[in-house]
Length: 454
Image 1 (cartoon, rainbow, N blue to C red):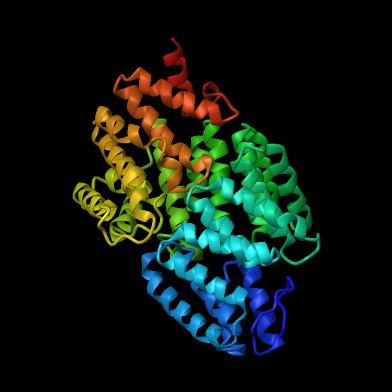
Image 2 (cartoon, rainbow, N blue to C red):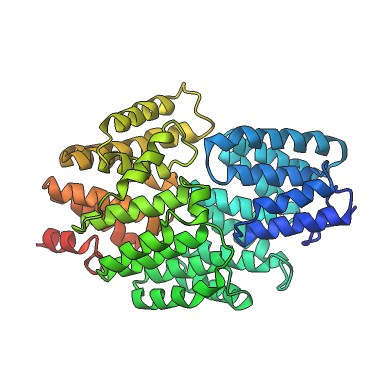
């Protein structure tokens, strides 16, 4: 039986099919824009290659787009059909993990990937899918546990080692171990300066430590290595804009918005204009700028168009408040109302909302979206009342500390405008307990910190 680049047995018909599969997995690990196109040679070489169909299904699930789910189900059915005849136990477990993901049972999917890694710690696809889903379901501790589980079994130089290092960097950053995070990220970048996930992890460390000028220079020095990258490059440019925002360089941040991470002429944006992370980048930046009194013109309108078209798609809970930001900012009150009604229905225990999504929608997404709308309408006390019970649950939406920050700024701004010093103090204490940089040195918190202290 042939083996993949990490030494795992695969039920492929030929070495050429396995090498094409390795190339596709490498594209996924390194955030290549042509990753989906790399699948065609895999299935052309062996149409009955079960893991090829599993990978296809996973790539269809990764954008969190409900329109892709039927195609992911089809890929899963093909994978099961072929693996039932000739697949290994490990490969069949991959199909079951994909099935759980399709059904919204993320806890079960994470458990299956963990079981795979227990017996096959060099299964880099299981490792990376686990990391991805643990992150987007608000479980940084499982990201870190996943890394530590496989790390002793990975020799330096094995294909995928850079991806493991990059994941180690990001997991440690999200869990507050900044020295380990930066060292791992820089080790990965020394192997490949085009390692976007490693660059992303180190940028997060610098954001959390308030190293703004250093962060700008760091990303500027790496940008030449990002050719051929997918939308993660947009997120790195968003990080750079965040550093400029903290330095009150608002024109520079808006310039990066228009020319880099929300460039509507970009082929990547044109190919998938409502890609979840791109929408998060764009909406959160415009919202932060407006909190600082910066006029953003008509930039909300195209985001609102995308948001209105996705009402009823709950696959990415963290994106929902960002879509509501766009609808509310553009004055799409009727659409915002429809989104809330649909959210309330999906959050009901008896709804058809898949898997674990309904409780997350009920406890976090719905109240935060209600707060976003109330805040835009000027009902600041209503925004505080809606969002206050969700503060402890917001992490379940997914997203990093840097990304969740926009929701915390929303609550703080509403509390200050509502004259609720106690709510403002609660929020400031929450962020001060997690973020190494004190609120008094962060642009979204400094004014409130000064007023509350006095």
